[in-house]
Length: 109
Image (cartoon, rainbow, N blue to C red):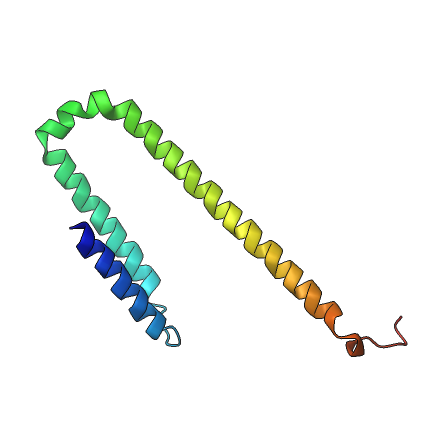
């Protein structure tokens, strides 16, 4: 099953790479709808499993802690990536602005 998921991810990535110059604006809302549907179906499956519900009290706090730390880690990683990409973008723009001395007008100096 894991191999199937990995293959689907790789095929999707390659397909996205091949179609990167086309208008794929419908993908984002479609992904949101499918993720919500997946979570809904998983909720139904967990809610119908009596063994999982019986263990929920025992695993509840641990599951909550794992979920919170996973969210915090995702937020921190996203913030770090955004910060580094913005920093690199600012450095690149700064280099482009000062890289060509002919772009400067002697009258403005």
